[in-house]
Image 1 (spheres, rainbow, N blue to C red):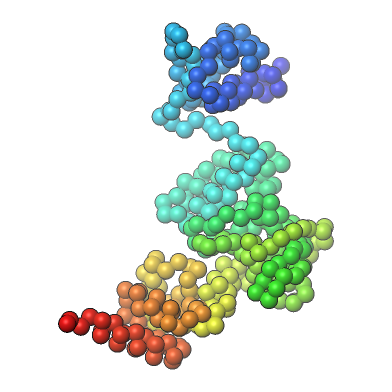
Image 2 (spheres, rainbow, N blue to C red; image 1 turned 180 degrees about the vertical axis):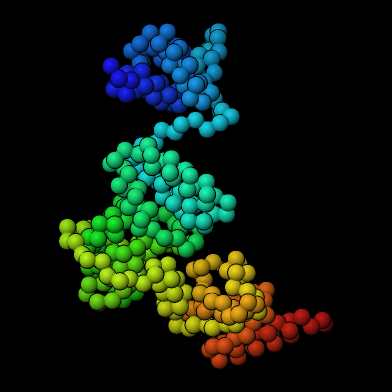
Amino acid sequence: MSETMEGGPTARTLRLLDLLQSRPVWSGTELAERLGVTTRSVRRDIDRLRELGYPVRATHGSGGGYQLGAGRRLPPLLLDDDEAVAVAVCLRLAAGGTIEGLGEAAVRTLAKLDQVLPARLRSQVEAIHEATVTLDASAPSVDARTLLLLARACRETERVTFRYAGPRGEGERRIEPYRLVATGRRWYLLAWDLDREDWRIFRLDRMTEPATNGWRFRPREAPDAADFVRRAITVGAYDHVARVRIAAPKSVVEQRLPSSVGTVTADGRSHCILEAGGQHLGAMAMHLGALPWEMEVQDPPELREIMREQAARMLRATREG
């Protein structure tokens, strides 16, 4: 009989590991009764776990038994379906280079995880991998079923319907999904809006009742998802848009400012242009004033005047007496 068959040594070893993780100490007799085997078989399975890297300690006397302790190296992990998908999503974010020093390790881990995933989960993980791009490091929590449904629809080019609570009220939307984009604050979906006949972005936390109906679509020529969402959330959604020339290279400014704050473009080797949106010019002036570089406000003129007023007020606040 194959060891991978139910009831074989491999399946029994996994069951033994599950028991050892469920409480601090088990006697050999208790384990044998739970597994339906002899205590000799339990000892062999304990040895097998140790060979795999699990530090199983054995103590004698009253109150003794087998105990699973902390080891020096990470043993194989047992994940259920939801845990495997969750790990894949987290690794995908790290593999995108958003967490310094983890990108290469995350890619290697993803490759190993993909090799051992069953077919029913591999398609789900691949859907999330293919449909997600990342702007910032820490995306907030999102309903896993919604995320998976949209990711699969992006990959399978399948139309999606959902109810959406936007700034102008709630209503049903019919879209052709293209890409999921994770930012430091929330998740977005870039999609073709069938009713408005244009590209739109949708916040996942504003969606309810997402569903696919089996209708496939032919992919359109789409804009760059990350750039489209970045501009929409930093410029397009605000009453005011500031354009500032900063006396620092683009790479230096991008290290200080998250992608969700604004769009940075190079202006020669030593300067760059920052475009950022805001609802209040006063708040924008304070945020810009806190940046550590020399700058020139190109637009709007009202922002320059407010910054002058704030600078004068700050100078007056520094007077002694």
